[in-house]
Length: 336
Image (tube, rainbow, N blue to C red):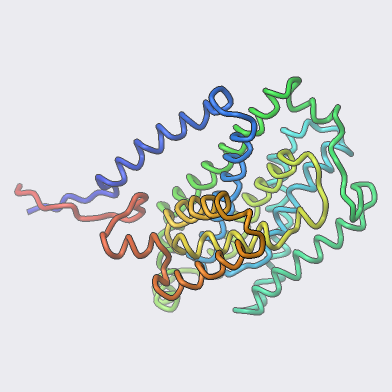
């Protein structure tokens, strides 16, 4: 008797096919959708990327950061700095923003990793506030009131409005789907095995010889660099930057945590479904004002009480369903 071992399942194969069709449709959006549609999908991709990255950080390594806005804002300001002060094409500044953010995350990690638990979370928020106050003092970048990207710089992205909107939209698609794909690839690697072990039982993973601190450090820097790319995309989407918007804890951390919590922390599918749910709620309930925020809070509390692992975690446990399997499974047995 021999076992048939595979990572893929029928559900994952169908999900992959649907994903390919969806990506093709999304890429063609500049020709079938309006500018408003492109911007909405682009914003969706921003939150999908941020949620996937924060889930990797908190759901697998246990690093509950409430200061990821520090890297969003840093990446955004790097793009503006290179475009306005160094004369770079904004598109060329985007990858540099990711690299620069990963580099700044190295000393930041050295600092915040000295803290544990709630102190770590508070420490990351303090770092974000330091970043915000620091950039607010830079008068050359508009200080506290911010700065808009001049028309001649914007035209470097593309000459016509159609192609500018399309280029920024395709960049959003690349970053959103790219972040999700990179997280999936990472979790299927040897580092992913270590992360899964840490997620399931950190104490046991130490006994297996996993260097937890080193893995956490590498993941933190990787997530920071990718988050910096999202910040760079935000700068191009808005064509204006202010310290309060770039380092907004509500936009870049609170809503992201909500997405991951209701979707399913510690799963790849969770951030996808959480982002879909968040945008549906926002589109239909945003006109309610403060009541909308109360509904989000009540929903988050309800999910945490009834399904601690999120909506997708509940579905996964009940139906043993996985759209993005990372481990090997024994499908059946074959006679040989």
